[in-house]
Length: 418
Image 1 (cartoon, rainbow, N blue to C red):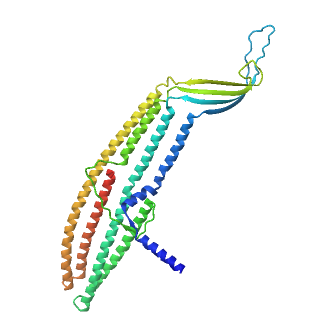
Image 2 (tube, rainbow, N blue to C red; image 1 turned 135 degrees about the vertical axis):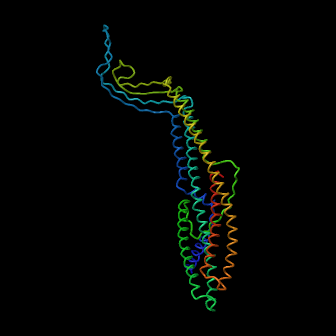
Image 3 (cartoon, rainbow, N blue to C red; image 1 turned 180 degrees about the vertical axis):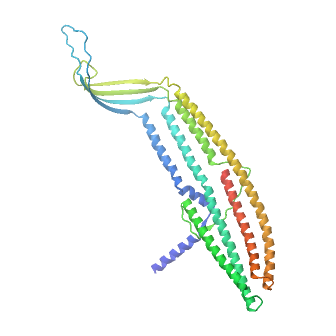
């Protein structure tokens, strides 16, 4: 009983899976979630967190331990002799160990500026990941609409096969009653075998596309899944809202924060320090013995002249900003041209679809006449199949142009950033 229940559950799960519906928007969502590149956002955030923690340590006290032993060729000695007074010179071998604590008091906001540069760079890097993922949507479109096109071809082939099978029965009856020649059914049977080959070829290609789409979005897709035909609306008057435009602005912001950082590199640094040590000699050079000592104080470092290095770095950043602005202009120009081309394609497919519909209506009338002629033995099965093929090709052309127009609209929206 348990085995039967297990088999029933397995059958139901397979049935549900085989009837799964898949939409274009779902593919986009899975791409953004599962594509390996998407993992970089979290990695970049973790890396930035470590960088910020490292930068923050510059505000903490710096503790240094140092030890040294030296031997020198000469030492300081009294240049004159004083009666009744003996001053022993220091030893030529000297020893010293120190522990120093340095605390930053003021550096003109250099650390905060470094933090802002790191944060600005993170935003630009994460936006670059978003841009790279966004550009993959065209590849998703290519696979998805190609699968839709092959589904349409399969439906048309199925209709053609059904029509030929029905006609084959009529031909068999005509042969039986002597109305048609005995070989009239052979042409129809050969055409049915040809359709079977076409089914196999289309299914192999379709399954290959499904596998590629599955790998791209990082999710399993059954070959029996139903691919929904999307309703794609286009707005030819809206502005471009691509993520690349946001990336250009973030790059400019990153340059601005870097410029602010450079401007603070030559500000004075004020440090407080304390040093304790043990050595021979200590601070009293005339005491020739091991002794402890300490120093406390404040020191100021200020790079007054840097040979215009700071100025040149800022000028270089301004050039980088001009480069980003130029890249933005080039991107907008190329995008506008691409949109115009896609709009032309959409209009072209719309016109072709109208022509296809007119051709199909004419082909249907011709085929209806051919059916009557075949039934009365006026034309051969070959001539009838020719008319069926002509209608099939016209319908196939219509479905192809419809899918191509949907693809052009979907790509238009991606190019625009809708």
